[in-house]
Image 1 (cartoon, rainbow, N blue to C red):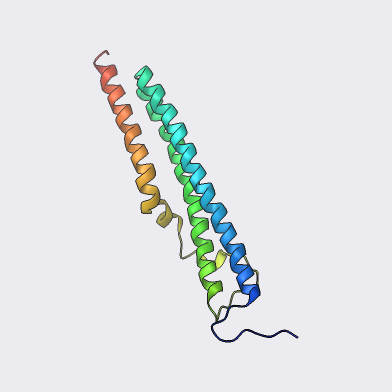
Image 2: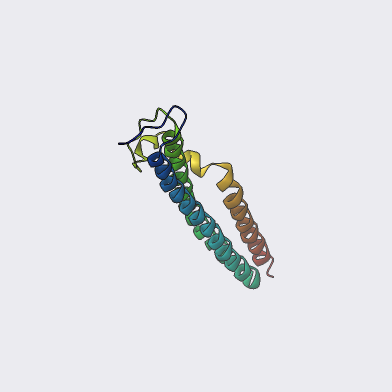
Length: 148
C-alpha cells in the first residue's frame, strides 16, 4: 500500500526527479566552466603569438575561436536555464510535469538564444576577450603601418 504525502510534503519520486534534473544542471555548469577555461587558453595563445610577431592577422584570427566558444557556452547556458525551469515546475506541489520527465521543450520559447547570447554572464566574459583581441589587432596594425 502506497501512502501519498500530505500537503507541502514532497514525494520520494519527486525528490529523485529533482535530483536527476539537478545532476544535469551540474554537468551543464561544469561544461560551461571548462569552455571558459579553453577560451582563455586559446585566446592567450593567440594573444601571445600576435604580440611576439606584431601581427594584426593573427590577433584578428584569434577572434574566431572566441566567437565560437561564445556560441558554445551560450548553448550550455541556455540548456542549463531550460533545465532550471523544469526543476522549478517539478518542485511545485501542483506540478503537471510527468514523473521523471526530462522534456525541456515547453520552456524553449521563454529562453531564447538571443537572450542568452546577450546575457551579462557571457557578454562580460567574451566581450572583454573580443575587446582585448581587437586592441591587439589595432595595435599590431598601427605598428605595421609605422614600419615597426
